[in-house]
Image 1 (tube, each protein chain N blue to C red):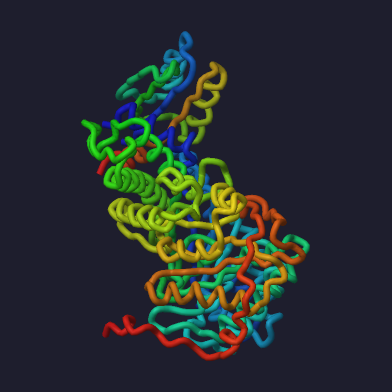
Image 2: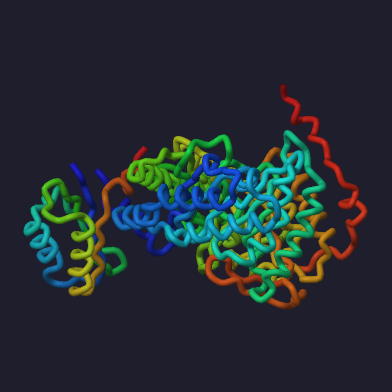
Length: 473
Length: 90
Protein backbone atom coordinates (compact mmCIF):
# COMPACT_ATOMS: atom_id res chain seq x y z
CA UNK A 1 0.00 0.00 0.00
CA UNK A 2 1.11 3.52 -0.71
CA UNK A 3 2.83 5.19 2.23
CA UNK A 4 2.74 8.76 3.48
CA UNK A 5 6.24 9.64 2.25
CA UNK A 6 5.34 8.66 -1.29
CA UNK A 7 2.17 10.72 -1.19
CA UNK A 8 4.07 13.73 0.15
CA UNK A 9 6.73 13.32 -2.55
CA UNK A 10 4.17 13.25 -5.37
CA UNK A 11 2.22 16.22 -4.08
CA UNK A 12 5.39 18.18 -3.50
CA UNK A 13 6.38 17.60 -7.13
CA UNK A 14 3.01 18.95 -8.22
CA UNK A 15 2.70 21.86 -5.81
CA UNK A 16 6.28 23.09 -5.50
CA UNK A 17 8.24 21.73 -8.45
CA UNK A 18 5.80 22.45 -11.30
CA UNK A 19 5.10 18.84 -12.24
CA UNK A 20 2.36 18.80 -14.81
CA UNK A 21 1.14 17.07 -17.90
CA UNK A 22 1.97 19.61 -20.55
CA UNK A 23 -0.54 18.59 -23.16
CA UNK A 24 -3.20 16.13 -24.16
CA UNK A 25 -3.26 16.34 -27.94
CA UNK A 26 -5.95 14.68 -29.97
CA UNK A 27 -4.76 13.72 -33.43
CA UNK A 28 -7.54 13.81 -35.99
CA UNK A 29 -7.34 12.59 -39.57
CA UNK A 30 -9.02 14.96 -42.00
CA UNK A 31 -8.30 12.88 -45.10
CA UNK A 32 -11.98 12.00 -45.39
CA UNK A 33 -12.91 15.71 -45.43
CA UNK A 34 -11.31 16.38 -48.82
CA UNK A 35 -13.77 17.53 -51.47
CA UNK A 36 -13.44 19.34 -54.77
CA UNK A 37 -15.59 22.16 -53.40
CA UNK A 38 -13.90 24.48 -50.89
CA UNK A 39 -17.06 25.27 -48.92
CA UNK A 40 -17.91 21.59 -48.55
CA UNK A 41 -14.34 20.79 -47.44
CA UNK A 42 -14.51 23.53 -44.79
CA UNK A 43 -17.88 22.30 -43.52
CA UNK A 44 -16.65 18.72 -43.26
CA UNK A 45 -13.50 19.80 -41.43
CA UNK A 46 -15.48 21.90 -38.95
CA UNK A 47 -17.97 19.09 -38.34
CA UNK A 48 -15.33 16.41 -37.83
CA UNK A 49 -13.18 18.42 -35.43
CA UNK A 50 -16.06 19.75 -33.34
CA UNK A 51 -17.63 16.28 -33.10
CA UNK A 52 -14.52 14.26 -32.21
CA UNK A 53 -12.96 16.82 -29.91
CA UNK A 54 -16.19 18.03 -28.30
CA UNK A 55 -15.37 16.47 -24.91
CA UNK A 56 -11.59 16.88 -25.04
CA UNK A 57 -11.27 19.97 -22.85
CA UNK A 58 -13.83 18.80 -20.26
CA UNK A 59 -12.27 15.34 -20.06
CA UNK A 60 -8.86 16.90 -19.49
CA UNK A 61 -10.30 19.04 -16.70
CA UNK A 62 -12.00 16.03 -15.07
CA UNK A 63 -8.83 13.92 -15.10
CA UNK A 64 -6.85 16.83 -13.76
CA UNK A 65 -9.23 17.20 -10.83
CA UNK A 66 -9.52 13.51 -9.98
CA UNK A 67 -5.80 12.83 -9.91
CA UNK A 68 -4.81 16.24 -8.65
CA UNK A 69 -2.34 16.83 -11.48
CA UNK A 70 -2.49 19.95 -13.65
CA UNK A 71 -3.02 19.31 -17.34
CA UNK A 72 -1.87 22.58 -18.84
CA UNK A 73 -2.96 22.35 -22.45
CA UNK A 74 -5.60 20.56 -24.47
CA UNK A 75 -4.77 20.64 -28.16
CA UNK A 76 -5.54 19.17 -31.55
CA UNK A 77 -3.28 18.01 -34.35
CA UNK A 78 -4.65 17.34 -37.82
CA UNK A 79 -3.61 15.79 -41.12
CA UNK A 80 -1.19 18.10 -42.97
CA UNK A 81 -3.67 20.43 -44.58
CA UNK A 82 -1.90 20.51 -47.96
CA UNK A 83 -3.17 16.95 -48.44
CA UNK A 84 -6.74 17.79 -47.47
CA UNK A 85 -6.96 20.97 -49.51
CA UNK A 86 -5.23 19.78 -52.66
CA UNK A 87 -8.49 19.01 -54.50
CA UNK A 88 -10.20 22.34 -53.81
CA UNK A 89 -7.57 25.02 -53.30
CA UNK A 90 -6.57 26.97 -56.41
CA UNK A 91 -4.99 30.07 -54.86
CA UNK A 92 -3.29 30.72 -51.49
CA UNK A 93 -6.48 32.53 -50.37
CA UNK A 94 -8.39 29.24 -50.55
CA UNK A 95 -6.04 27.79 -47.95
CA UNK A 96 -6.56 30.86 -45.79
CA UNK A 97 -10.28 30.02 -45.83
CA UNK A 98 -9.45 26.58 -44.41
CA UNK A 99 -7.19 28.21 -41.79
CA UNK A 100 -10.09 30.40 -40.66
CA UNK A 101 -12.35 27.35 -40.44
CA UNK A 102 -9.75 25.53 -38.33
CA UNK A 103 -9.41 28.56 -36.05
CA UNK A 104 -13.17 28.67 -35.59
CA UNK A 105 -13.28 24.93 -34.79
CA UNK A 106 -10.41 25.30 -32.29
CA UNK A 107 -12.27 28.11 -30.52
CA UNK A 108 -15.53 26.15 -30.53
CA UNK A 109 -14.01 23.14 -28.72
CA UNK A 110 -11.86 25.35 -26.47
CA UNK A 111 -8.37 24.11 -27.35
CA UNK A 112 -5.59 26.70 -27.19
CA UNK A 113 -3.68 25.52 -30.27
CA UNK A 114 -4.43 23.44 -33.33
CA UNK A 115 -1.43 22.19 -35.30
CA UNK A 116 -1.26 20.78 -38.80
CA UNK A 117 -1.41 23.76 -41.13
CA UNK A 118 1.40 21.84 -42.67
CA UNK A 119 3.04 20.35 -45.71
CA UNK A 120 5.55 17.53 -46.00
CA UNK A 121 7.91 18.56 -48.76
CA UNK A 122 11.08 16.73 -47.80
CA UNK A 123 11.75 15.59 -51.36
CA UNK A 124 9.59 17.78 -53.56
CA UNK A 125 6.67 20.20 -53.49
CA UNK A 126 3.37 19.56 -55.19
CA UNK A 127 1.46 22.58 -56.52
CA UNK A 128 -0.82 22.23 -53.51
CA UNK A 129 2.12 22.17 -51.06
CA UNK A 130 3.47 25.35 -52.57
CA UNK A 131 0.09 27.10 -52.42
CA UNK A 132 -0.21 26.19 -48.77
CA UNK A 133 3.28 27.44 -47.99
CA UNK A 134 2.58 30.73 -49.80
CA UNK A 135 -0.64 31.14 -47.79
CA UNK A 136 1.16 30.86 -44.42
CA UNK A 137 1.88 34.58 -43.84
CA UNK A 138 -1.76 35.53 -44.40
CA UNK A 139 -3.08 32.50 -42.49
CA UNK A 140 -0.88 33.28 -39.45
CA UNK A 141 -1.99 36.91 -39.55
CA UNK A 142 -5.74 36.24 -39.59
CA UNK A 143 -5.93 33.32 -37.13
CA UNK A 144 -5.11 33.05 -33.44
CA UNK A 145 -4.74 29.40 -32.60
CA UNK A 146 -3.39 27.77 -35.74
CA UNK A 147 0.16 26.42 -35.83
CA UNK A 148 2.00 25.72 -39.03
CA UNK A 149 4.90 23.38 -39.75
CA UNK A 150 6.77 22.49 -42.92
CA UNK A 151 8.98 19.43 -43.17
CA UNK A 152 11.77 20.28 -45.59
CA UNK A 153 14.05 17.28 -45.26
CA UNK A 154 14.64 13.81 -43.91
CA UNK A 155 17.43 11.28 -43.57
CA UNK A 156 15.76 9.15 -46.23
CA UNK A 157 15.15 11.88 -48.81
CA UNK A 158 17.78 14.53 -48.25
CA UNK A 159 16.96 18.23 -48.00
CA UNK A 160 14.62 20.05 -50.38
CA UNK A 161 16.61 23.24 -50.81
CA UNK A 162 13.89 24.88 -52.93
CA UNK A 163 11.58 24.59 -49.94
CA UNK A 164 14.32 25.78 -47.58
CA UNK A 165 14.87 28.87 -49.72
CA UNK A 166 11.13 29.53 -49.96
CA UNK A 167 10.73 29.19 -46.18
CA UNK A 168 13.33 31.93 -45.70
CA UNK A 169 10.98 34.29 -47.55
CA UNK A 170 7.84 32.95 -45.91
CA UNK A 171 9.26 33.51 -42.41
CA UNK A 172 10.15 37.08 -43.34
CA UNK A 173 6.68 37.70 -44.81
CA UNK A 174 4.98 36.17 -41.77
CA UNK A 175 7.01 38.50 -39.55
CA UNK A 176 5.92 41.44 -41.70
CA UNK A 177 2.23 40.44 -41.70
CA UNK A 178 2.20 40.20 -37.89
CA UNK A 179 4.53 43.13 -37.14
CA UNK A 180 1.96 44.89 -34.93
CA UNK A 181 2.31 41.98 -32.52
CA UNK A 182 6.11 41.73 -32.53
CA UNK A 183 5.99 39.30 -35.47
CA UNK A 184 4.12 36.78 -33.33
CA UNK A 185 3.09 34.78 -36.43
CA UNK A 186 6.60 33.34 -36.63
CA UNK A 187 6.24 31.87 -33.13
CA UNK A 188 3.54 29.61 -34.56
CA UNK A 189 5.55 28.52 -37.59
CA UNK A 190 8.26 25.87 -37.50
CA UNK A 191 10.44 24.35 -40.21
CA UNK A 192 11.39 20.74 -39.53
CA UNK A 193 13.63 17.96 -40.73
CA UNK A 194 12.60 14.37 -39.90
CA UNK A 195 9.29 15.57 -38.41
CA UNK A 196 7.54 12.83 -36.41
CA UNK A 197 3.94 11.90 -37.30
CA UNK A 198 2.77 11.77 -33.70
CA UNK A 199 4.28 14.80 -32.01
CA UNK A 200 1.85 16.32 -29.47
CA UNK A 201 3.85 19.54 -28.96
CA UNK A 202 3.29 22.79 -30.85
CA UNK A 203 4.15 24.34 -33.17
CA UNK A 204 5.28 21.17 -34.96
CA UNK A 205 2.31 18.93 -34.19
CA UNK A 206 0.47 17.30 -37.05
CA UNK A 207 -1.39 14.03 -37.49
CA UNK A 208 0.64 12.03 -39.98
CA UNK A 209 -0.83 9.85 -42.70
CA UNK A 210 0.53 6.76 -40.95
CA UNK A 211 -1.86 7.37 -38.04
CA UNK A 212 -5.36 6.08 -37.28
CA UNK A 213 -8.53 8.17 -37.67
CA UNK A 214 -8.15 9.68 -34.20
CA UNK A 215 -5.58 9.20 -31.48
CA UNK A 216 -4.60 10.57 -28.08
CA UNK A 217 -0.99 11.63 -27.61
CA UNK A 218 0.30 13.05 -24.36
CA UNK A 219 3.29 15.28 -23.71
CA UNK A 220 4.71 15.16 -20.20
CA UNK A 221 6.99 17.72 -18.66
CA UNK A 222 8.66 18.43 -15.35
CA UNK A 223 12.04 20.17 -15.62
CA UNK A 224 11.44 21.59 -12.14
CA UNK A 225 11.20 18.10 -10.67
CA UNK A 226 14.50 17.01 -12.24
CA UNK A 227 16.20 20.18 -11.05
CA UNK A 228 14.98 19.67 -7.48
CA UNK A 229 16.15 16.02 -7.46
CA UNK A 230 19.60 17.08 -8.66
CA UNK A 231 19.83 19.80 -6.00
CA UNK A 232 19.07 17.21 -3.35
CA UNK A 233 21.86 14.83 -4.38
CA UNK A 234 24.45 17.57 -4.19
CA UNK A 235 23.15 18.73 -0.83
CA UNK A 236 22.23 15.53 0.87
CA UNK A 237 24.27 12.44 0.07
CA UNK A 238 21.54 10.15 1.15
CA UNK A 239 20.42 9.51 -2.38
CA UNK A 240 21.27 6.08 -3.62
CA UNK A 241 19.27 3.62 -5.63
CA UNK A 242 17.63 2.22 -2.51
CA UNK A 243 18.10 5.04 -0.07
CA UNK A 244 20.99 3.36 1.74
CA UNK A 245 24.62 4.27 2.13
CA UNK A 246 26.67 6.84 0.31
CA UNK A 247 27.83 6.30 -3.22
CA UNK A 248 29.28 8.28 -6.04
CA UNK A 249 31.18 11.08 -4.39
CA UNK A 250 33.26 12.98 -6.93
CA UNK A 251 35.81 15.68 -6.25
CA UNK A 252 34.60 18.70 -4.22
CA UNK A 253 31.92 16.56 -2.67
CA UNK A 254 29.70 16.68 -5.74
CA UNK A 255 27.74 13.68 -6.87
CA UNK A 256 29.52 11.96 -9.74
CA UNK A 257 28.01 11.27 -13.15
CA UNK A 258 26.76 7.82 -12.20
CA UNK A 259 24.66 9.23 -9.37
CA UNK A 260 23.61 12.20 -11.47
CA UNK A 261 22.43 10.06 -14.37
CA UNK A 262 20.69 7.58 -12.11
CA UNK A 263 18.80 10.42 -10.42
CA UNK A 264 17.63 11.93 -13.71
CA UNK A 265 16.53 8.51 -14.94
CA UNK A 266 14.54 7.74 -11.81
CA UNK A 267 12.87 11.14 -11.88
CA UNK A 268 12.03 10.84 -15.59
CA UNK A 269 10.47 7.47 -14.87
CA UNK A 270 8.16 8.95 -12.25
CA UNK A 271 7.16 11.88 -14.42
CA UNK A 272 6.42 9.66 -17.39
CA UNK A 273 4.31 7.25 -15.38
CA UNK A 274 1.97 10.10 -14.56
CA UNK A 275 1.76 10.91 -18.27
CA UNK A 276 1.00 7.29 -19.07
CA UNK A 277 -1.81 7.24 -16.51
CA UNK A 278 -3.33 10.44 -17.88
CA UNK A 279 -3.02 9.20 -21.46
CA UNK A 280 -4.75 5.91 -20.69
CA UNK A 281 -7.53 7.64 -18.79
CA UNK A 282 -8.09 10.21 -21.53
CA UNK A 283 -8.09 7.49 -24.15
CA UNK A 284 -10.62 5.39 -22.21
CA UNK A 285 -12.96 8.28 -21.42
CA UNK A 286 -12.92 9.73 -24.92
CA UNK A 287 -13.13 6.35 -26.63
CA UNK A 288 -10.12 7.23 -28.76
CA UNK A 289 -7.05 4.94 -28.95
CA UNK A 290 -3.90 5.88 -27.05
CA UNK A 291 -1.04 6.74 -29.39
CA UNK A 292 2.16 7.71 -27.65
CA UNK A 293 3.72 9.52 -24.73
CA UNK A 294 6.19 12.20 -25.64
CA UNK A 295 8.86 12.11 -22.92
CA UNK A 296 9.89 15.69 -22.95
CA UNK A 297 11.30 18.18 -20.52
CA UNK A 298 9.38 21.19 -21.78
CA UNK A 299 10.14 24.43 -19.96
CA UNK A 300 7.79 27.37 -19.44
CA UNK A 301 8.65 30.96 -18.55
CA UNK A 302 7.60 30.22 -14.92
CA UNK A 303 10.44 30.36 -12.41
CA UNK A 304 11.64 26.86 -11.55
CA UNK A 305 10.27 25.31 -14.74
CA UNK A 306 13.47 25.56 -16.70
CA UNK A 307 15.73 23.17 -18.61
CA UNK A 308 18.51 25.76 -18.39
CA UNK A 309 18.35 25.49 -14.59
CA UNK A 310 18.97 21.74 -14.86
CA UNK A 311 22.06 22.39 -16.96
CA UNK A 312 23.21 24.82 -14.27
CA UNK A 313 22.58 22.19 -11.60
CA UNK A 314 24.65 19.73 -13.61
CA UNK A 315 27.48 22.23 -13.36
CA UNK A 316 27.71 24.92 -16.05
CA UNK A 317 27.52 28.53 -14.86
CA UNK A 318 25.14 29.44 -17.67
CA UNK A 319 23.91 27.43 -20.65
CA UNK A 320 26.41 28.20 -23.39
CA UNK A 321 29.49 27.72 -21.20
CA UNK A 322 31.87 24.97 -22.36
CA UNK A 323 30.43 21.65 -21.20
CA UNK A 324 26.85 22.65 -22.01
CA UNK A 325 26.52 20.32 -25.00
CA UNK A 326 27.79 17.36 -22.99
CA UNK A 327 25.49 18.20 -20.08
CA UNK A 328 22.50 18.44 -22.42
CA UNK A 329 23.45 15.18 -24.14
CA UNK A 330 23.47 13.26 -20.88
CA UNK A 331 20.25 14.91 -19.73
CA UNK A 332 18.48 14.05 -22.97
CA UNK A 333 19.68 10.47 -22.89
CA UNK A 334 18.77 9.84 -19.27
CA UNK A 335 15.29 11.30 -19.75
CA UNK A 336 14.73 8.78 -22.53
CA UNK A 337 16.17 5.86 -20.60
CA UNK A 338 13.99 6.55 -17.58
CA UNK A 339 10.93 7.37 -19.61
CA UNK A 340 10.97 4.44 -22.00
CA UNK A 341 10.38 1.95 -19.24
CA UNK A 342 7.51 3.96 -17.82
CA UNK A 343 5.35 3.93 -20.91
CA UNK A 344 4.15 1.26 -23.29
CA UNK A 345 4.47 3.51 -26.35
CA UNK A 346 6.94 6.34 -26.65
CA UNK A 347 7.11 8.66 -29.62
CA UNK A 348 6.94 12.27 -30.74
CA UNK A 349 10.01 14.35 -30.03
CA UNK A 350 10.97 12.84 -26.65
CA UNK A 351 13.89 14.61 -25.03
CA UNK A 352 14.81 18.00 -23.67
CA UNK A 353 13.50 21.17 -25.32
CA UNK A 354 15.74 24.22 -25.41
CA UNK A 355 13.56 27.14 -26.49
CA UNK A 356 14.97 30.53 -25.61
CA UNK A 357 11.94 32.74 -24.97
CA UNK A 358 10.04 30.05 -23.06
CA UNK A 359 12.79 29.37 -20.52
CA UNK A 360 13.87 32.02 -18.00
CA UNK A 361 17.27 30.38 -17.53
CA UNK A 362 17.97 30.54 -21.26
CA UNK A 363 16.91 34.19 -21.41
CA UNK A 364 19.28 34.96 -18.51
CA UNK A 365 22.09 33.16 -20.36
CA UNK A 366 21.52 35.22 -23.50
CA UNK A 367 21.40 38.44 -21.49
CA UNK A 368 24.59 37.50 -19.66
CA UNK A 369 26.30 37.01 -23.04
CA UNK A 370 26.87 33.30 -22.42
CA UNK A 371 24.69 31.88 -25.16
CA UNK A 372 24.89 32.47 -28.91
CA UNK A 373 22.94 31.04 -31.84
CA UNK A 374 26.04 29.07 -32.83
CA UNK A 375 26.19 27.38 -29.41
CA UNK A 376 22.46 26.71 -29.55
CA UNK A 377 23.02 25.04 -32.91
CA UNK A 378 25.64 22.77 -31.34
CA UNK A 379 23.21 21.93 -28.55
CA UNK A 380 20.55 20.92 -31.07
CA UNK A 381 22.80 18.04 -32.16
CA UNK A 382 22.07 16.32 -28.85
CA UNK A 383 18.64 17.53 -27.72
CA UNK A 384 15.22 16.59 -28.95
CA UNK A 385 14.47 19.42 -31.35
CA UNK A 386 16.29 22.48 -32.65
CA UNK A 387 16.64 26.24 -32.73
CA UNK A 388 13.46 27.16 -30.93
CA UNK A 389 11.83 30.49 -30.14
CA UNK A 390 14.83 32.60 -31.00
CA UNK A 391 14.23 36.28 -31.77
CA UNK A 392 16.61 37.80 -34.31
CA UNK A 393 16.89 41.29 -35.87
CA UNK A 394 14.04 42.16 -38.25
CA UNK A 395 16.48 43.12 -41.00
CA UNK A 396 18.04 39.64 -41.20
CA UNK A 397 17.97 38.67 -44.91
CA UNK A 398 15.67 35.82 -46.00
CA UNK A 399 18.71 34.05 -47.45
CA UNK A 400 20.41 34.06 -44.05
CA UNK A 401 17.29 32.53 -42.47
CA UNK A 402 17.28 29.91 -45.23
CA UNK A 403 20.96 29.23 -44.46
CA UNK A 404 20.12 28.69 -40.78
CA UNK A 405 17.31 26.29 -41.78
CA UNK A 406 19.70 24.42 -44.10
CA UNK A 407 22.25 24.00 -41.29
CA UNK A 408 19.66 22.69 -38.85
CA UNK A 409 18.19 20.34 -41.45
CA UNK A 410 21.66 18.97 -42.19
CA UNK A 411 22.16 18.19 -38.51
CA UNK A 412 18.84 16.35 -38.47
CA UNK A 413 19.43 14.55 -41.74
CA UNK A 414 22.90 13.30 -40.88
CA UNK A 415 22.14 12.37 -37.28
CA UNK A 416 18.79 10.73 -38.07
CA UNK A 417 16.98 12.92 -35.59
CA UNK A 418 14.30 15.58 -35.66
CA UNK A 419 15.57 19.13 -35.92
CA UNK A 420 13.59 22.32 -36.28
CA UNK A 421 13.86 26.05 -36.70
CA UNK A 422 11.38 28.38 -35.08
CA UNK A 423 13.01 31.74 -35.45
CA UNK A 424 11.41 35.17 -35.25
CA UNK A 425 12.87 38.06 -37.26
CA UNK A 426 11.12 40.79 -35.27
CA UNK A 427 10.24 43.66 -37.57
CA UNK A 428 11.65 46.99 -36.38
CA UNK A 429 13.80 45.50 -33.63
CA UNK A 430 17.48 44.79 -33.39
CA UNK A 431 20.14 43.48 -31.02
CA UNK A 432 19.68 45.10 -27.61
CA UNK A 433 15.88 45.14 -27.87
CA UNK A 434 13.52 42.72 -26.18
CA UNK A 435 10.37 41.18 -27.56
CA UNK A 436 7.34 40.11 -25.49
CA UNK A 437 5.11 37.32 -26.83
CA UNK A 438 3.13 36.75 -23.65
CA UNK A 439 1.80 33.61 -21.97
CA UNK A 440 3.58 30.32 -22.58
CA UNK A 441 5.59 31.87 -25.43
CA UNK A 442 7.42 34.19 -23.01
CA UNK A 443 9.80 37.00 -23.93
CA UNK A 444 13.22 37.15 -25.54
CA UNK A 445 16.18 39.40 -26.10
CA UNK A 446 17.01 39.80 -29.81
CA UNK A 447 20.06 37.66 -30.57
CA UNK A 448 22.74 38.65 -33.08
CA UNK A 449 23.02 36.63 -36.28
CA UNK A 450 26.21 36.02 -38.26
CA UNK A 451 26.21 38.86 -40.80
CA UNK A 452 28.06 37.12 -43.61
CA UNK A 453 25.97 36.09 -46.60
CA UNK A 454 24.78 32.62 -47.54
CA UNK A 455 22.90 33.86 -50.59
CA UNK A 456 24.90 32.02 -53.28
CA UNK A 457 24.52 28.78 -51.35
CA UNK A 458 20.76 28.87 -50.81
CA UNK A 459 19.97 30.26 -54.27
CA UNK A 460 21.37 27.23 -56.08
CA UNK A 461 18.04 25.41 -55.97
CA UNK A 462 17.35 21.70 -56.15
CA UNK A 463 17.94 19.26 -53.34
CA UNK A 464 20.76 17.91 -51.23
CA UNK A 465 20.95 14.13 -51.65
CA UNK A 466 20.29 11.76 -48.74
CA UNK A 467 23.39 10.78 -46.75
CA UNK A 468 25.11 7.48 -47.41
CA UNK A 469 24.03 5.91 -44.11
CA UNK A 470 20.37 6.25 -45.06
CA UNK A 471 20.75 3.35 -47.50
CA UNK A 472 20.11 0.50 -45.16
CA UNK A 473 18.11 -1.78 -47.44
CA UNK B 1 -13.05 -0.85 -5.38
CA UNK B 2 -12.36 2.84 -6.13
CA UNK B 3 -9.78 4.09 -3.69
CA UNK B 4 -8.72 7.61 -3.08
CA UNK B 5 -6.09 9.29 -0.97
CA UNK B 6 -7.04 12.23 1.16
CA UNK B 7 -4.19 14.39 2.38
CA UNK B 8 -4.36 17.05 5.04
CA UNK B 9 -1.46 19.48 5.33
CA UNK B 10 -1.21 22.51 7.60
CA UNK B 11 -0.63 23.84 11.11
CA UNK B 12 -1.81 21.34 13.68
CA UNK B 13 -5.23 22.35 15.06
CA UNK B 14 -7.76 20.68 17.33
CA UNK B 15 -10.38 18.64 15.54
CA UNK B 16 -9.03 18.45 11.99
CA UNK B 17 -9.22 14.68 11.79
CA UNK B 18 -12.60 14.65 13.53
CA UNK B 19 -14.10 16.99 10.98
CA UNK B 20 -12.80 15.07 8.00
CA UNK B 21 -13.81 11.71 9.48
CA UNK B 22 -17.31 12.90 10.34
CA UNK B 23 -17.76 14.12 6.80
CA UNK B 24 -16.56 10.80 5.39
CA UNK B 25 -18.86 8.82 7.68
CA UNK B 26 -21.83 10.99 6.68
CA UNK B 27 -21.17 10.10 3.06
CA UNK B 28 -20.65 6.35 3.48
CA UNK B 29 -16.94 6.48 2.80
CA UNK B 30 -14.88 3.83 4.55
CA UNK B 31 -11.42 4.67 5.87
CA UNK B 32 -8.94 1.87 5.17
CA UNK B 33 -5.78 3.36 6.60
CA UNK B 34 -4.59 6.54 8.31
CA UNK B 35 -1.05 7.72 8.87
CA UNK B 36 0.42 11.02 9.90
CA UNK B 37 3.69 12.76 10.52
CA UNK B 38 5.03 16.22 11.29
CA UNK B 39 7.33 17.65 8.59
CA UNK B 40 8.95 21.01 9.34
CA UNK B 41 6.27 21.84 11.94
CA UNK B 42 3.57 21.02 9.44
CA UNK B 43 1.00 18.42 10.15
CA UNK B 44 0.84 15.87 7.31
CA UNK B 45 -1.87 13.26 7.29
CA UNK B 46 -3.09 10.86 4.69
CA UNK B 47 -6.07 8.57 4.62
CA UNK B 48 -6.68 5.79 2.17
CA UNK B 49 -10.43 5.62 1.65
CA UNK B 50 -12.85 3.39 -0.22
CA UNK B 51 -15.28 5.37 -2.38
CA UNK B 52 -17.30 2.37 -3.59
CA UNK B 53 -20.35 3.19 -1.47
CA UNK B 54 -19.97 6.94 -1.49
CA UNK B 55 -23.26 8.77 -1.81
CA UNK B 56 -21.61 11.64 -3.62
CA UNK B 57 -19.77 11.95 -6.91
CA UNK B 58 -16.00 12.43 -6.82
CA UNK B 59 -16.08 16.06 -7.90
CA UNK B 60 -18.51 17.04 -5.19
CA UNK B 61 -16.54 15.16 -2.51
CA UNK B 62 -13.34 16.79 -3.61
CA UNK B 63 -14.84 20.30 -3.53
CA UNK B 64 -16.47 19.79 -0.14
CA UNK B 65 -13.31 18.38 1.41
CA UNK B 66 -11.36 21.36 0.08
CA UNK B 67 -13.94 23.63 1.68
CA UNK B 68 -13.64 21.88 5.07
CA UNK B 69 -9.89 22.44 4.78
CA UNK B 70 -10.30 26.12 3.96
CA UNK B 71 -12.68 26.60 6.92
CA UNK B 72 -10.12 25.16 9.35
CA UNK B 73 -7.05 26.74 7.75
CA UNK B 74 -5.49 23.55 6.39
CA UNK B 75 -5.13 22.16 2.89
CA UNK B 76 -7.24 19.10 2.18
CA UNK B 77 -6.83 17.27 -1.12
CA UNK B 78 -8.59 14.24 -2.46
CA UNK B 79 -6.96 12.32 -5.32
CA UNK B 80 -7.57 8.92 -6.87
CA UNK B 81 -4.97 6.42 -5.63
CA UNK B 82 -3.78 5.49 -9.14
CA UNK B 83 -1.51 8.50 -9.52
CA UNK B 84 0.58 7.45 -6.50
CA UNK B 85 0.51 3.79 -7.45
CA UNK B 86 1.70 4.49 -10.97
CA UNK B 87 4.46 6.78 -9.83
CA UNK B 88 5.89 4.69 -7.03
CA UNK B 89 5.16 1.07 -8.02
CA UNK B 90 6.39 -0.86 -11.02
